[in-house]
Image 1 (cartoon, rainbow, N blue to C red):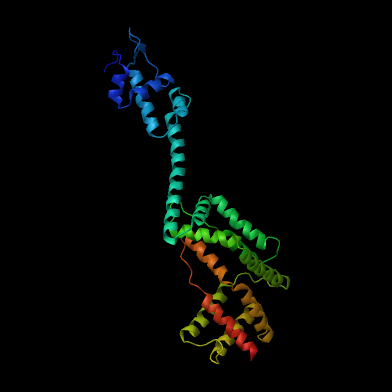
Image 2: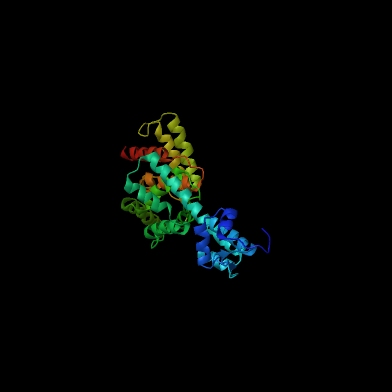
Length: 312
């Protein structure tokens, strides 16, 4: 083919691999108008029409609709602009497909019902902002109007779910469970009780913030007791509790007496809801963080030992 030759639709079809019907449609809609007509009235096309047809085919293969293609051909928008916009759209489609794949794998693994599958799919499709808003609404409802421990509330607000673009089925599972937890009335009541307890403590002058060092002390002392097989209601537990209550008395500026132990027991009972630890565990799975070891056995032993001591 050269610049002076005119070609029929059939010739273009053989050259491009498109059907005659498709080329005729593009011609009728003005995307690839004919250059001339033969004496018998057949459409003829020159080399420029062929180049235009090749561009239309390429853009269609990339998934662009005819309206956008017309804008490109009419020079209303440039090919780079279209390519950038289309790449962004494909990113969204790819992310959606990855989420669907993760949901399907999670459904296959857990044997979900159709209703559970629908819920998982809806929750997985939430945007990052929507996921954060769901968690922040939960925190606002449970802590919002109370003067609770500000360090604890800030920690809760900063630890938001960030589901990756290509999540593992376990991450989808964890997000669905976390979303369910935030909407669970019983869990909300338990967290609200924690917030109220913190506010009451602050009203009495407690501004000590978070107590990571105390938690590590409890983990170490009780961990040794658990390893040694010491029962919480046994005489051997008394020295462990004595050491811990002395440490609490020091941190909070209180006397190590029966009142302190009653206060400490209430504090631990309010805070030791296994669902709160599960909440942190699920966040870690969703965000790909190291999952912290469970402290539930440690604080369960501590609480039981305190109760046993107070009964004596």
